[in-house]
Every structure is written in C-alpha cells, then in structure tokens.
Amino acid sequence: MATNDRPVGENHAGHGDHKSHGNHNGDGGHDHLHHRGAQRRALIAAFVLTAGFAVVQLVAGVLTGSLALLSDAGHLGTDALGLGLATLAVSAASSSTAGRRSTFGLYRLEILAALLNAVLLVGMAAYVLVESLRRIGEPPEIDAGPVLAVAALGLAVNVFAYLLLRPSADASLNVEGALLEVIADLVGSVAVLVGGVVILLTGWRWVDVAVGAGIGLWIVPRALRLGSKALRILLQMAPRHIDLDAVRHDLATIDGVVDVHDLHVWTLTSQMDVATAHLMVRLGTDSHAVLDRARELLESRHRLSHATLQVEPEDHTGCDEISW
Image 1 (cartoon, rainbow, N blue to C red):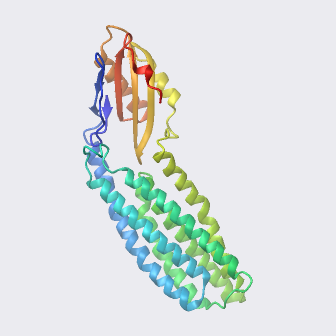
Image 2 (image 1 turned 90 degrees about the horizontal axis):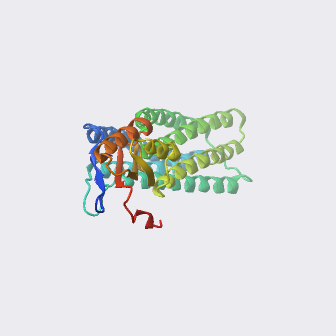
Image 3 (image 1 turned 90 degrees about the vertical axis):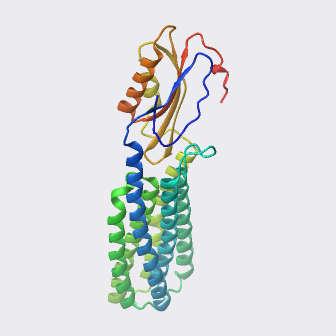
C-alpha cells in the first residue's frame, strides 16, 4: 500500500488479511516541509506589512472621517489576525509529528485557520454594510487629500503582499485564504483611491459610503467560497477532483480482484488526499502483486499517494457487517 511517510494510520488486520504501508516518494516529507517553510516566511512578511498598515489606515480614517478608509482599516485588521492565525497554523503543522493521540499530526490546523479567516471576512463585510446603511442618509465631510495618499500607499503594500503569497496559494488552502484577504485589501485600496479622486473632483460625499459598501459586497461571495472549501475538508467529503466511480473501477480491473468495497477518499490538508479500500481477491492470488499494482494505479491515475489497502481472500467474511 502507498502512503505519505509523515502521517501514521492505524492498521487492524483480520486473520488471513494483508495490509501494507509503503512510501510514495522518498522526498515527499521533505517537499512538504520545504513548501511549508516557504509558506511560513511569506505569511510572516505579509502579516507584518498588513498589521502595520492597518494602524496607519485606522488613524487616517479617524482623522479624515472616511468610512471607506475605516472599513478598509477594519478589513486590514481582520486580515492581519487571519494572517497571524495562518502563520501559526503552518508553523504548528510543520513542526508537529504524528503521535499516539494525533496520528496525522496537526495538518488540520491549516484548514481550521482557513475556515476562521472566512468567518472573519464575512463578519467584517457585515459590519461595513451596516455602517454604510447608517451613514447613507447623512454622509460625513471627507478630507479627500489624505484619503488619496493613504489609499495609494495601501495599494503598494497590498501589491507587495500579493506577490509574496501568490506562489504558495495553489499548494495550500490556508495560504489561499490569506491571499484572498490580500486581494480583497488590494481591491479595497483601488476603490478607496478612485472614491477619493471622485470626491476631490466633484465633492460628492456619498461616494465614500458607496465605496465602503462596495468593498463589503465584493468580499462576501469570496469568503463564502473559501469557507465552503474548508468545510468540505473538515467534513471529510471526497475531493472534487477525485472520481470515486473511476477509482473503484480501476481497482476492480486489477488481476485477481473480484470486489472493491469500503472505499473512502478524503483530504487531510491542502494537496494531501488520503484513501482507504478493501480489495477482495480470488483464492491463490498473490496479494503482494495486487498491493503493488493498486499503489501504482492510485498514484499515477488519481494522484492518491497516501492510501491504506486491505486485501482479503474471497472466502473472507465479516467486513460487510460494518454499517457506517
């Protein structure tokens, strides 16, 4: 059977059954640690930038009375918290090892951080929308000059943070969540910048309220998408890119296999999918050959390099009594 060499699963083999744990790639554990090291460095840098500039925007928002700046400052503060949580999660997952109680290490902390980031984003968007409705009838006076200056600086900070996180976003849902927050900040800075220009040229105070509400509305669907991804993983649903029927069919075509049951596929954390299955074989079949072929098939066709496979002779009974 094929498996990632860091998480450790439990084996309970019945009489006459064969289970196997094999290593999918000698460098797999090293590659995960290397990627997480790069993710951690990028997250730390983005956190320092975001937290520092959130303070600048908060002060500027209070001094200018700009809802757009205040909403963006609150959004940045929320993002800084999210980035800090993401950094802690990556650090904990990278330094943890499997133990008697945490047999898969602490990789799921990254997914919990991503879910919390989504909740924080939705909460921040709700606050901005409520504040926009409160101010829409009587928009305050806005000092457009400082608003423009702060928005321009914020745009530069967000572009730099985006460049830091983008290379790692495809490899981690946690970093993807952090990148989403930075993109929302970037869009917010552009919106505040445009709003400041319009106010400076026209004197339309309502534009500031509209920009603040627009930022909130832009954030919501993206935060919900991130939360949905995290929940799918926490609920151990099959990954969208894995066709379970195809996996079952391919395993059933292995010479000697007469039945495939108890097939489960789920995601441990970003880019770490896990599978378990029972393969029933004809009497006299070489179980080692079946395991080797199954391992090769799962990795090459379905990118499942961590799997636990139980090979059972066709006269074996009892496994079908499991009801869940």
